[in-house]
Image 1 (cartoon, rainbow, N blue to C red):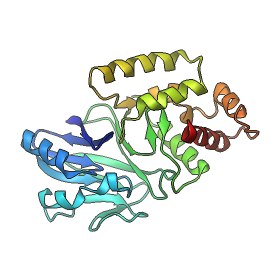
Image 2 (cartoon, one colour):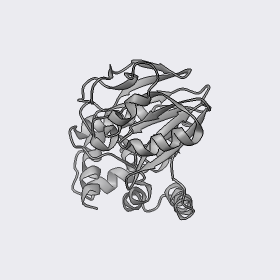
Image 3 (cartoon, rainbow, N blue to C red):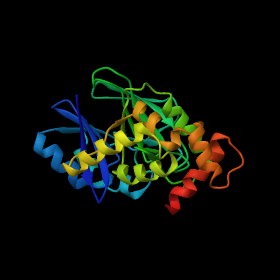
Image 4 (tube, rainbow, N blue to C red):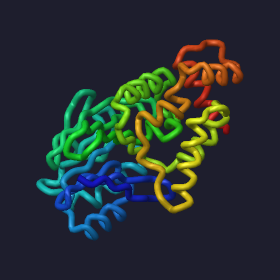
Length: 259
């Protein structure tokens, strides 16, 4: 099974998994990169997974439906969001079986009210894979457009509990910007310094910084480290008096919005 990041717009990634014959794609905001990749590899489109309703994640659905195998309804998305119909609505704990793979659905509200993620355990695709949309970024998390800090804290906690070798397939190339902020939060972190150097080298070579891993994010992502003393201290420096994870995350997110 092959995992491919298809660049779209200025900084999006549309993720593709394929076995050399059939493919699934995740959050196709633009149909053109998907169509080009399918044609170049001679692949049939077997399914589309959607994490949330924002246009840069669903904008290509209409153009791609005619390419779907079967009746063109093999699109899955969050039940609690308005995804362009028809689609198969999913809630927490549901499973999606396609091209010999079975994805577990995890509800991760925060960025949007009904955001979901797709987790693929280790198996045919190798080490585990997480398609997390705009909930988790390498070194950061999504803006809280519809959810609360408490929701995002819980959502990130659920993702942090996944196996450390899980490949984190985020929907945007925000890593370098996020790591600059992370360095402001934890300037003494050796793990962060090493990861930043690695990511800068990848970008200089024209390569994606993604996928990351859950273990990597636990070590360097301040939004997944809200219980770390250095992160709590940084939040206190921004006026936070409540050391709870939700309060720390809320302060970090507000700080990042202005960073």
